[in-house]
Amino acid sequence: QVQLVESGGGLVQAGDSLRLSCQASGLEFTTYNMAWFLQAPGKQREFVAFISRSGNTTYYGDSVKGRFTVSRDNAKATVFLDMNTVTPDDTGIYYCAGVHWQWGVQFRPGGYAFWGQGTQVTVSS
Image (cartoon, rainbow, N blue to C red; front, side):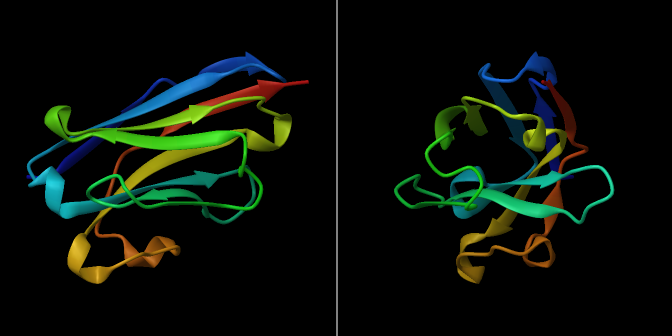
């Protein structure tokens, strides 16, 4: 059974930094491309960051470029999202998602097979 478990969310102030983690189990982690999505209140789930199975290729949503960094530790089957200089617009539930590498780079939620339960991030102004 595949499980993705996010952690690291919380309440922070604008300008702060935060690290989210996603622990994967039940899958061959090194064969999966991973991503982070944000679901802000009242909005659709949107793409935040993508990382390839090797970690060599990354992509970011326009709103987080230069502020967020996605990385992974394949030995620990964990993907990270380092969030810097957060703003209230970064508030919402952050979801970790995975898709087998054969499906290539995916930017839409529908392109991902597995999802975590999400972790809440709230940024106060």
